[in-house]
Length: 504
Image (cartoon, rainbow, N blue to C red):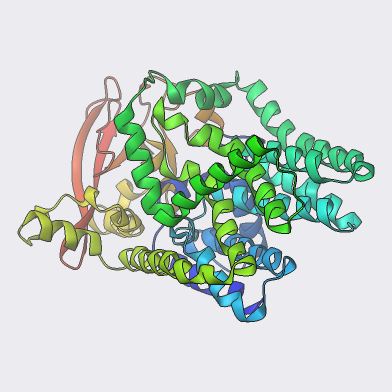
């Protein structure tokens, strides 16, 4: 089971991820992978590096413009996260007969696992988290080997190269080592932690230094500009997290906090194994919770930001199968809840279930153009892969040889990934985006304002980012609109313009 369960998860995620198109953000990360750098506009370089590595490894066998190759590191990383979690639980005493139950509890975190086939920065972040978590545990609780120290270094490096929020994970590692590592072992542990931190943070500092610190400023300042206290937004955050993680996970999170506060007030220093594991998990929960469970009160949030808080809570629930056998009675609810919704999410990517439900609820007639496809986010995986053949079939010749421009990174990325036979770039673009895209020589500048065109181009937009071209003094006309339907329901439309610097 220790190999079979992670392998089955890998196969499932890879088959699923290979069968549908990329999301906008995944297409963008693929674009970044075509030009490796120490950093990028929105994230450190790990996600692009993973895509580039597998593209280099297998690009001679498979076309680099297929979704399965882009998502291969996501499927592999997710199965490794899952496998390392089961291995950690086995080290704590999980019996072979309970492994399937533990796997069901872990996979019930459907907010993560039902989307973990997507190649996004959270995959290397969680992989780095899991490496760091398990190596710190071994260094604190077992007789370590050299590979545990180097594993610690690797975990820190990967975590910091994945997302800026990785610094919270490193702080958890530092706290856990300071509390539980034997005194004679603490100095080398902190040394390898520091070494991994240097490897992880220096590329980001180097890139930001050469780009006027725009990426760091965006994350710290610009992303939360104009923030204000909102109780309604805060309640919405907890409601969404309750759905995505499961009500039992959120309830157990507060239960852990309550028991931790009680132990502090009673100055309980018991060496009970259960409490030691629980306290260790709390050092990986509290730093991230102090940010991601408070920040939504003051500014907008993305639901997946808090997943790094819920994952150790899920591990704590699975640990109950070892110390409290009766816990399975109510863990069955969490497992059934998460696995059911996880299957629903996976199925929705292949069938427009969300659209069917929304149409039924709103009593919208069933004609193709009667429903706004933006209301079903699974529609985003469809349409772009057929655009090149649509352009060549309808206009061919000289139009099909023109450079293609998108004004949003989402549309430009989808066009560049899917229009493999055409030249594509983003215009306009600001300083933090400038190095990520090729200069096709079609304008007298790159941005951030709309530049003047110097040659003819095609411009693309879709139903989610539908603003047309605004090149000054250019003559632009809409050539047509490509539409993609799923089961006779409109899923995507892409509008194509032809623009020239003077009269056509």
